[in-house]
Image (cartoon, rainbow, N blue to C red; front, side, top):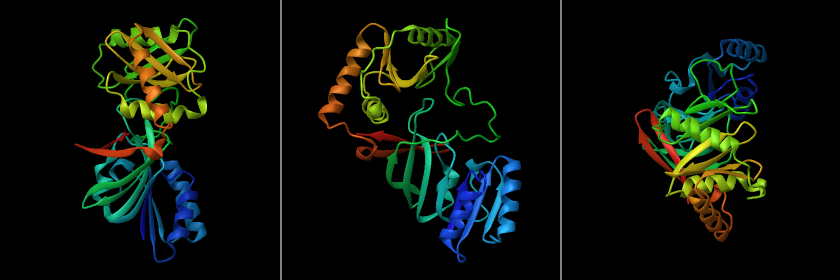
Amino acid sequence: MRVLEIGTGTGYTAAVLAEKVGASGYVVSVDVDQELVTRAADLHKKSGNTHVEIHHADGTTGRENGAPYDRIIGWTTPHVLPEPWVRQSAHRAVIVTPVKIADIANAHAVIRCRIEHGKPAEASAQPGSFIEMTPEPVTDFGQPLRYVDSIVTTEAGERAWISISGHSVPPEQADAITRQLAAAEPQPEWIDPACWREFTAYMLGTLSDGTPISASTGTGQGFGFTTSDSAVLVLRDGSVAACGTAAALATLRGIRDAWERAGQPGYDAATVAFTAADDGWRPSLRY
């Protein structure tokens, strides 16, 4: 079995994979951080792991020299399921990786899928995420790396931001929504915080009347949506921030009611659908 690992890190997981595949298998691992690559390669050499090779490279492109792979595992979050990963997979190979499930910041899930005839299939999703995939090592963790439409400083001196699906909202309008959500008094105990991931995934997967958003108010982060004259944000603590008219909040109540009637479905109840893009496959959750 041949395995491609995206994100070498300390090298420990490559050692675990090498143990799993045995002497007849092979593990190829790539990372954008040269220092980590050098350290991991040295550790594997000292450990006698001759069936592991470590490379300094952008994981988005996979590793052509070594394909096809029977398994690909990602320890970093790409914005799509990269086309090179799919192309470099053997028939019926399995890919497990976190990936974006919507074109807004922080909307991630861990996807497991098989590759059938050059396409992802038989996919399932679980909550989870790792650092966003970039061609260079990340040094600033203060905000998401992709899809942020506005960053403002609140009256309390906190940094707030918003990500609006489609990314076509004028900057001044995005700034205004960010400030209004940050200034809104959250409505507490709107949902059980323990169910926040499941509910917001359901909300994003079923929303038909609104534009999905993710945002930070400076004191909390969450997912929600905007309408033409309102916005709501479901925060991690189970509270809801709202601004504008009552339209978005009314829609959110309807989504919550439907979710509760359905038995509060989680990720395991979702169907993972893939849409082809120029640089890969975009997964989304459907209920």
